[in-house]
Length: 264
Length: 212
Image (cartoon, rainbow over all chains, first blue to last red; front, side, top):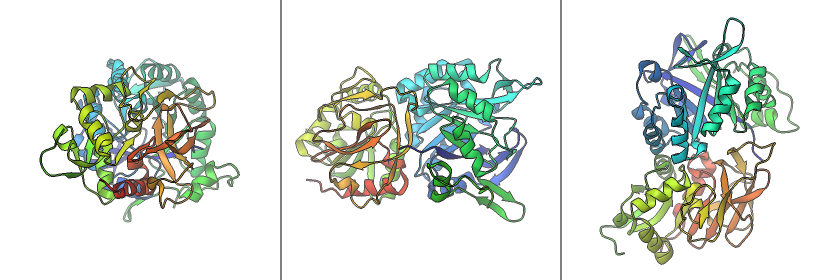
């Protein structure tokens, strides 16, 4: 039977891997190709790479970068950042990307999801859904790497993205991004319950047990950035991914309830 | 159709949609060499063929027909019997047709492709790592550790889980065909090019199947 997926998310800006906190400011981590090669060698379930500068700068996807990353990846790769046309998606898939993550462009051109799914199948189209809370604490959708607000509740938007043909939703919690204080499980549950496609959740994972909590709340996959990439000043970058026994303990029935296996 | 030029080892058929880059990378990592081609002349001298996935059924059919590849592929696969591996959508195209679209598959194997039956508990697409239940021996599966996992990402599957061509099944709510074989013709519903070590071993096994 299928198991929940655990997915490292790599953020890239100007071809450099970065970490973020609430989607800003950026902290330099290293060469994304190195990190991706390590995650791939460790047998990560999937890897998501997001070019967080593409949409704010108004450019399309960095195909050279995507090709370099894809050539190092023996596990499924999802790539997002600046995808504006079905041709963009096709070019990425030809290079070796299994799924494209489309976010900002869907605000002005929702049909982009449908056109891309019609050519490549909905299973190749991941719709990004970034959420920040307003002053009253209500969750609101934002695009363009957290710079442009849409007047839509995430549950409503998730349903719309599925109806347009997205085969998966990547839900990212901007407020909890980089905080390592846990996912917002109410938000996870609400979005997961609203759709029939798989939902990947990201933003807030601080321990292995958070990954399981997200799945219990309804996510099909738990994604994390900070949890898997550590930068200790003076000691370089440490890549971490749970091994098979640790993953089985989290997700296989009868596995030991999670101890805090987060930090190496 | 007679070919021109030297025989190429493996040709990954490019019909305009598909993750040909991943497949080419994986063949390289598995120790082989592959050429990506949309040319009937190159396909006509290929000693081995891979039909890639990541496309909708009709988009692939349109690409195949726009490039006029049906005849040369039929000659090579059925006429000459070169080892041929269909991956995901590539496997589905081996059959007659799919509920996903109105286009015609190659029809080299009998059967239709249908959408997973909706189940309240299970989300679609079937997306993630799953295991195989081996029904009969097949060169593709040789040497794989027991309970090897492969990456599936699809909403459609072959309608029959039993039958002479079914080599292995997978379970997602119910059993469905995950590996098929008929002589030189192989199909896998999952993506071996992205299934880490087990997938690379399967691809290496395919590259070792003798070509005529």
